[in-house]
Image 1 (tube, rainbow, N blue to C red):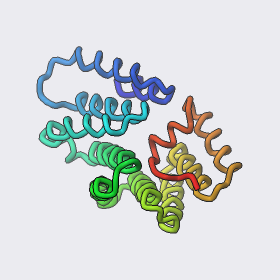
Image 2: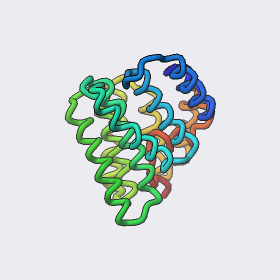
Image 3: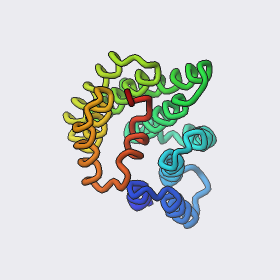
Length: 212
């Protein structure tokens, strides 16, 4: 279910990804919250993000977080990092268009997830945390902090051999600097990795106010 549905998301087909996840879950007989339910939740939330519906993504995430928490799957580092990173991105995406008071609350929630990522000490989480901090800085229009954290994200992803993520971070750095050629080169690299709509993918992985 997971990898087939993720490939549909990369092709810009969120509805097909949700259908794949739903069909797989329908064949599962266990009533308790299991790993397959975690991935179904992940994919449904991610599909809403791909479709440009962050508020719907947040609603789905919040409705599923209680059962996820009670399942104790988040005690396993891999799943904790995966879901905390998703949660941070969703809250950041919602913060982009939120009013001042709600934006402050959404950013606070995103930063809580980021601190959890940083606390794990996992190399592959470091770049994710730095990218989220850079995204938050663009939302508050703190370009100095955004550049500082996006550079850390590039280094973190490169050090963890996460090439596609590194290209996303490079694209956002180029966007901050108004570097048209650099942005185009990174978008081309993302597209060569099999992503059909690189601009949408950038918004998915690094929401924020990046244009200057």
